[in-house]
Image (cartoon, rainbow, N blue to C red; front, side, top):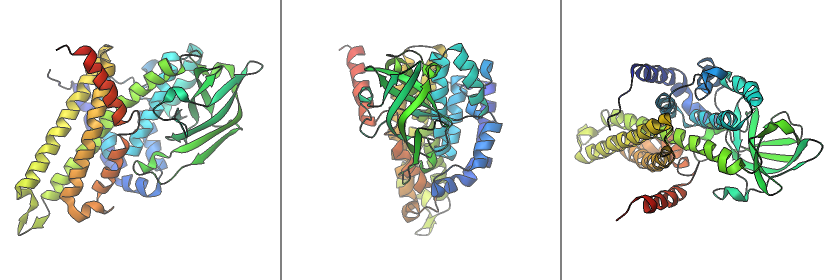
Length: 379
């Protein structure tokens, strides 16, 4: 199948690329060193309404088509993996409200999220619970028409700055999804530092000690918190991460081509070395292959095709493993310089690894894709 961007999508790509070149790339290294996103970048994201990219126009968002949304994540991922992670988790919370919230909840939260007046964060993982999400230990109880929340969430992306959190907890043994506001007096937020990559994702640990939550902050119904709410959020997360991997890989490829054209060894540019040419060729093909898988997932998502779920799994699996190979080759091409933080490929290499863990590890993807293959392919 041939994928061609329409005029709107082509214009969007140019606009996104310029924004990233002008506003994000110049401070991406600073983000990594300081482990926080520059407030000016966040303001620029708000000004351009990118935090509302996934929210329908009816609620003040941009209502982007799936391909434009993917390209936005690719381009921002090319500039800074941490800024792109904001798009993912903010979008996951917005999507949960859009799909499973009441009209009152949509009208109240979504316009604020579209404008960037509030930033959302996703709270599922716990200190002892990762891939086995059904085993979450955070609990809620109901007393006098309000919920009381207790427990701990860990690795919460944007947790240091988020205004609302979508928290998953057990209510009488059944999972539910609840909105918790940062202003909750019994919520303790502890910043976490020292992440391998995507260091400016501003992750945090959240501790809930008898947090009082209004009854109308339940999203959907008790019992569907994981099977419906979390599942749809994670599906969106995998989609945006796959595109973000393309962005990081593209950045690594461009940096390698530039470096190989300037670096001289043995009296000639290293781009003339056939083994360097082989590495560049493989990187180029891998990036193109990943992008085509993302286009395929985008096309199916735009149509509402149920096969889009598995195609998104495939795209995220391929792209997250691909970006590690491409970033690794970029470091190799740079030699000793590639191991030094004055060169961006050192950051790309660290950022790449995170993608094999978040929103489903590589091994979880392999299990699910293989099961799908056994059920679909008859021999």
